[in-house]
Image (cartoon, rainbow, N blue to C red):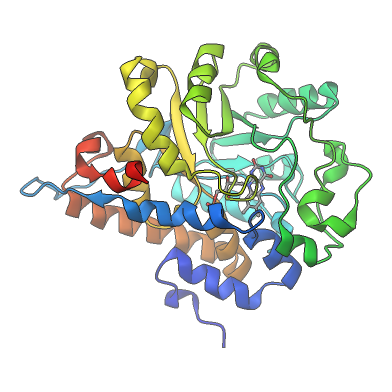
Length: 368
Ligand code: FNR
């Protein structure tokens, strides 16, 4: 009864298939958002408040949507964002995402709480493929320092410090599903006193340091040469502070709606942030990314029009991997590329440099 892969025509289709075939606990962990899941839903629907203002009679015979992220060339402006516990969805875990990312020449962000070990995910990379590390900061800074140094030694090209999770959000769907087995490498991240009655997310997060603050950022800058990006910044005041403290970028994100419910979507924050950064010349100093709810190439294009350097995509690749393994991830990425080519052509933008705020009408987004 399961549809064949070729019957998936967009990223939402993978979600529908995954829901039918995944174990209940795994589905609950991947699909859940915090509290009433208002932010999780808003993440995608916020894109629908932006309309295109295409240009006609532009030569769009050859479309090229390659770009760079933190200096690394990529074929399309998205990256595979960090999502914990890949083996809940597929016994091979995150290395499937590594292989998909390699095939499509996009960057993979490795989660601190991956199911595969960090080294397995690094070893699965091929031919100088770029990977980043997502960092949950441990209460024990020696552990954190070792993780950072090891990542740098193994060739990671960016350190994404998650700043929106001093405490893990309550994801009730996940808590109800009574998780028992994560298949994760939590020991290596210092996780202990695991309380399994709280769902997968909360059970594995006890080591995260809630005292982490702006005062700690210079220390991170001093212990690594990797560019540092703060993942989970949610207003322009904090983006300015990030630029001032000297980090290399921010991800405007609400953690896929899994943390503070009724927090704003990444795309809405972007609309607030970019005009101020441009005014202050800070748009040249830091790279701005967004994630959350990106499901269509039009979502990617809207984010780039508003000034994002790129976007992160999480759940769709988890669902594709859970339903179909590597061929699923491969097809999901290819579908985005096909959509990208068509939509860039229809908007009248032949390359990423041609995308600008004048190509969108974001008044409904800004007005709320
Ligand atoms: C996440 N996300 C996340 N972020 C992070 O910094 N560390 C983590 O361990 C995880 N783990 C995680 C697990 C699962 C199952 C999901 C769905 C998400 C958040 C992730 O990086 C990203 O912010 C969102 O997933 C983006 O939203 P979409 O694309 O899933 O809508």
